[in-house]
Amino acid sequence: MKKSDITKRKLLQSVEELLDEKKFEAITIRDITNHAGLAVGTFYKYFSCKEEALLYIYRQADDTFRDLEESDNPTQNIRRILVVYYHMVENDHQDLDRAIYRAHLTFHDDYFFTEERELFRRLCANIKALEPNKNAGDMTWKLLVFMRGLIYNYLITFTRDEAWHEHCVSATIDYLTYLLH
Image (cartoon, rainbow, N blue to C red; front, side):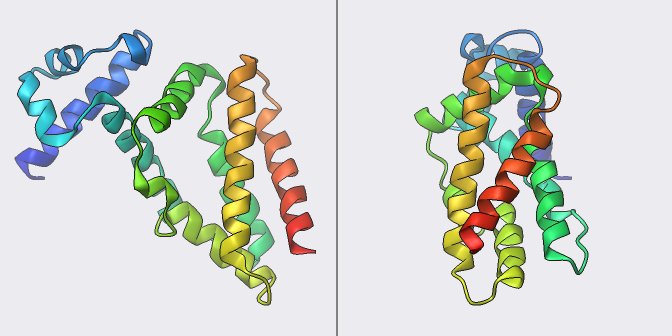
């Protein structure tokens, strides 16, 4: 691993560890670099702001979809993708998830709105396999907006519901069924 990769990883790990101690809004760039044992200027070699660093951590979570095993059954694959996606929102880390949504508002990262995103590619391929005559790309975008909406609603209610993940998977499957017919 290159030294620059190690340094970047240290910064990101510092952000994650500091999030266990305090809210994202209270974390400063100096907090991050002090925690990592690096100079403040080093942070800016890799990120323009702390929101960019947070979204980079979120972006890395998408690697989970790259490693997700799929079967020949597109319906099962979609369900598996949804389970993984919704389980990225944790009952015990709602502050982190809220910080990610706020970071999206203050720092736009094109990655999350591209068809190159692994989540998009996997969903789209499986939707196309289910219904080859429909516009799978358009349906995938609609599904992603719906999914973000469910998460947003969950985060603004400040509730902890263990059944929430399964409710979201079922609601999303219902919505996809509606889009397909």
